[in-house]
Length: 148
View 1: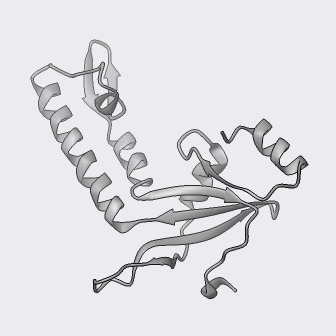
View 2 (view 1 turned 60 degrees about the vertical axis):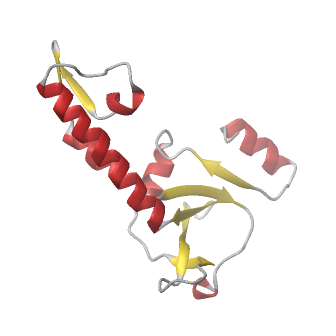
View 3 (view 1 turned 180 degrees about the vertical axis):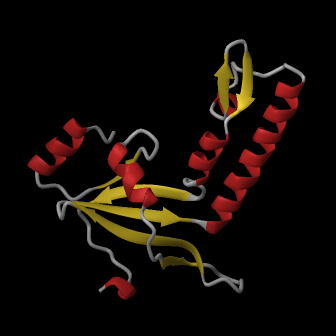
């Protein structure tokens, strides 16, 4: 949905929009996610000690494009645990030379060295940057009070 052509057409029609961004394939989105920032709570959590279930941060690129980086700590924890389980299986299988290269979940954490595969620590570290995050681009202004 978020091709450059789609965004151009939507903006030409002067429509307001909120679009999801593919974080791993967009160079600009990768840069937006990499920025350290202050998140503000946007979705209250009921019946718990933690005040927010989701937090967000507004990021402008070249004063022209507005992104909202969202973070869910519960999802970040789940993503981390899932990745650790897959990496542990990869390490165990690569030690036995039984790597499931056809499995996309495993393959993204592996690097090949000739006829052998090994766990790629750089890929694991890069993937950890996305834990619990998603990125939107929008023309809507719905900023938390803290940003105003």
